[in-house]
Image 1: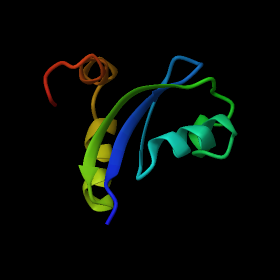
Image 2: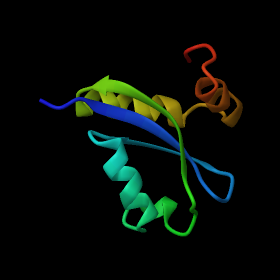
Image 3: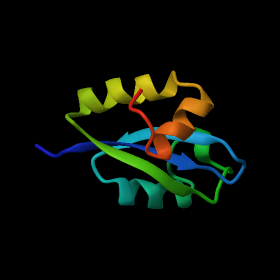
Amino acid sequence: MSTWFVYILHCGDGSLYTGISPDVEARLKAHHAGKGARYTRGRGPFELVYQEPAGTQAEATRRERAIKRLTRDKKQELILGGSEP
């Protein structure tokens, strides 16, 4: 069983994208190649600004949803290592 990760990308247009993957580096390469999520297409370049281990895919999905519900300011706090929301 592989460990899944939740990650946040800073997109070239200034937006933040949150996703999950068992291999964040491979997923980042897919985003750069235009083969990642539909949201990221045309929004590069990307910078990986945050990642955390999440255990299973189900746990990663739950954490992704929780992060996506955060305000941009709360996401920035998380990225900068602030309090865990």
